[in-house]
Image (cartoon, rainbow, N blue to C red; front, side, top):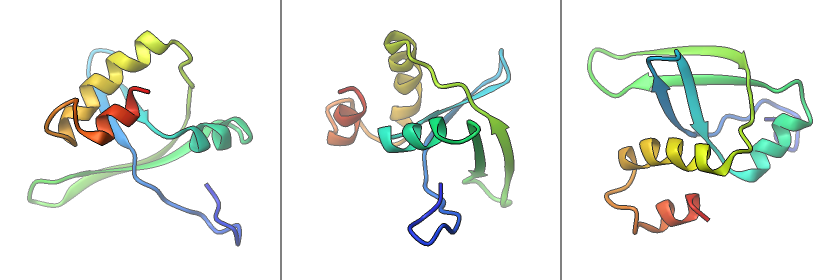
Length: 97
């Protein structure tokens, strides 16, 4: 995304790597999806491993926006436990609206 000065802007998203398909899934807010639809559907990403030694991966890929709510809920259900203690957490509830 670009900020109001049209400089690159980085914002965190939740992610899930599915080994069987070799895909990275991200959850994000509506405004970011709108931005992706108005560009070439390209997303830059950085995924850090929280363990020592420091390591991670950066890249840029074309994205597919999933419209199937049942698919999205399934993926979100795999991502949310990494960030919240229960699905009653306000952040979790916001993701399932």
